[in-house]
Amino acid sequence: MERYKILYEDETLFVLWKAAGIPVQSARASVPDVMHLLQNRLLEEESKELRLFLINRLDQPVEGLFLVARQEKAAAELNRQVSGRTHMEKWYQALVCGKPPKEKGTLVDYLLKDGRTNTSRVVPAGMKGAKRCELSYEVIQEWEHRSLLRICLLTGRHHQIRVQLAHAGVPIAGDRKYGKADAGEEKLSLCACKICFTHPKTGEQMQYQVEPTFLLPGADRGKKGL
Image (cartoon, rainbow, N blue to C red; front, side, top):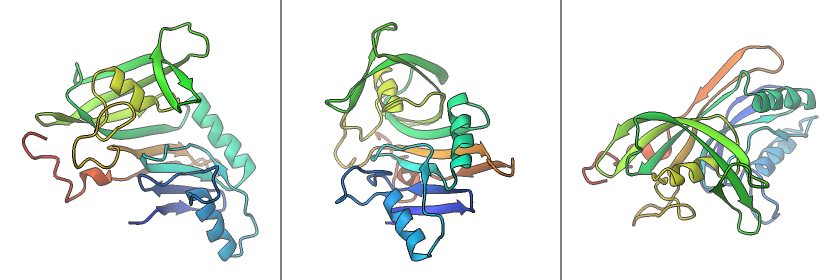
């Protein structure tokens, strides 16, 4: 399976998809990551501009879409869209264990990150170091023991979707860190499936969408009892 794909590129930015299990960026030189693979590609093409600016990071177990800017000015504008929640939307799909209490809703929690264990947890509001996080979700399909959710991420915190859904009683299938993984579930069933943003140079409204690999043919999620 391909490690990553370039869905769009120009002199300003890349729109990329990465597979689950591949890091976007790694501190270890021995671990191949998308940013280094992309820089190697530019070197092979003898590109004059080799600097890359990562806009939105995806956790290593998560598949899906993310942006990389090729110019500092473009990076600043895209980061403004991310931090200001203006002109940029990030949508996910997640296969979760069980059923959420409502067909659609909003989850608001406060998360505290533990750097020693690389985990986050929900804590009371006001606790030192805690950060407010918010997402909205909608159930788009249900089975006996699983639900497929469409999620709009409204803030970007460490492991946010995984922690909030687990705290709500519907951990993501295959999540060994915050939930449980049944036999045969080797990967986290979470995909950054859609991104909408304004092109930092042309002002054009851009939209890209992919289908989660855990929903593709061969991944039989419709079987009774799943």
